[in-house]
Length: 516
Image (cartoon, one colour):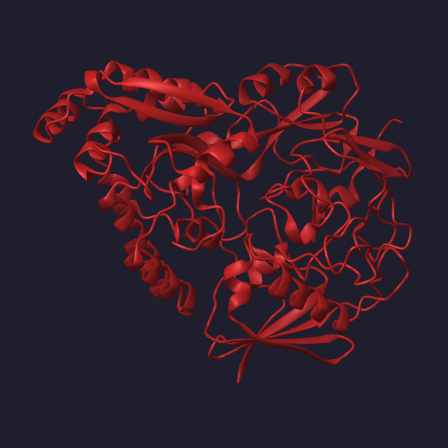
């Protein structure tokens, strides 16, 4: 007996009263009162593009989903939706997934989307891609086959609850894509736009795919993506040089007063945290009591007020209140919801630590918010050597594990597992959280992933997170939604749950310009 799904049960993430009211003067949903207009080029600038090979990305999902799609997608409420697959069945034991493809879908080169092509993509990711979000899932794939042109049967070695959500980031490419056997240089997808001219860190031109499977879409003739990091997106939007951008929240608040601009947010949030070097800690930070003392010294309310004075949410969890995996008891028991300098000093004294004799080596990106934590640590008496680095420099430095603390942030994810997997001993890109090495934590996360019952799975994830708190591996400071701004001429577009600009029930395929 199998369970059939046209879509799985929704796991709605409510972003809370304050976050939902971000830029309250502007509605979060705009009724489409204008008939779609064909043509025009939309100028787009949110996250970057780090590779032409969608299977090998390190987080650049806001651009590549213009031209590639997956079997499933994540809708604006966090629920999983059918995309290239029109539906799927899951066996009672949670090990066998049977996907049924839509009819009439073609790749950008004119070839039909077939089950064999999907199997080839799954096998490529399983056999050739060693890192990334899907690495753990692919290790559990025992077999994948295509009994006919529209059916894919994927068999796992053990139950794997996140699979259908994670398949939203296994993008389906034509095996005819240049570089298929090594690194893809010209991806051939099924998306509403095609991969055109790419100038790394400068721009990508994505012309419309006229044979797109969704009737009459896309409406736009092309999307021009600005990939430069040195532009002032707010001013470019005001000047009419860009149409959709991501901006800092303070910039978004200023833009919201402009009648020609509309501001809104992604539906999931970014969470901020201070992490310790857990893989190679130097004394005295190898002592949990010292880490606890530092946590008492960090004023989370002040930090989140700096990040998002109207919309920030202070909590000690990786998800916001309202999320299915949020635990109210853990939230209420947060010992660090308010700073306590006296408690911090007392714990340091118990540990025999004199802050004035110790330097903290702290790593961050080139943002302003880490300085808030730096000043708090200095008030406790520590000397702080703060290295603010660009993305590549920070990743390289963190990977050397020659630091003491990191103040970072992590954005929206398609499934809660994509947060937990990075806390595992062999997880992808674990450096932001200090490369935790904890066999019991690994066991709990693996047990949660294999648990088909929703309530039992939540209990296991909660137990795993409690272990994180008990060991003081990192400290969650709070959450804030990501701001998106667009010209009023942009119609039919609302940001989704993640950074993806295109999903089954919305996004850039149905976007048009009310003026050229």
